[in-house]
Image (cartoon, rainbow, N blue to C red; front, side):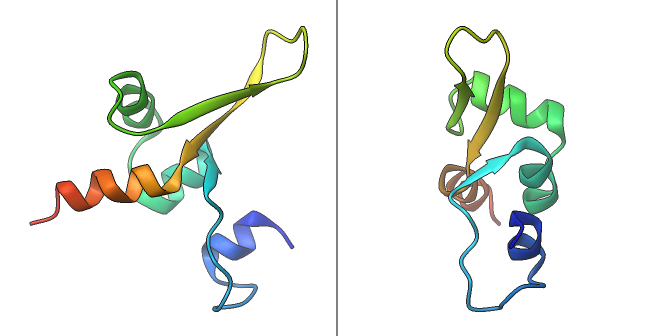
Length: 77
């Protein structure tokens, strides 16, 4: 099962969306651009982590879906 199947609802409607989203999935999930997501976590408005291997200079950036939902709820009309 792929995370994209869960996010797009193609796997099973009773499955929960994953807590942590890679940047492309967070963009698709929220409709917020990649650059705006980076701005939001840099400013501390949403939570994000970078998962790196030992000694690695690159990592995988993950966005916390719950903090993203809370951010969007605060801005809902």
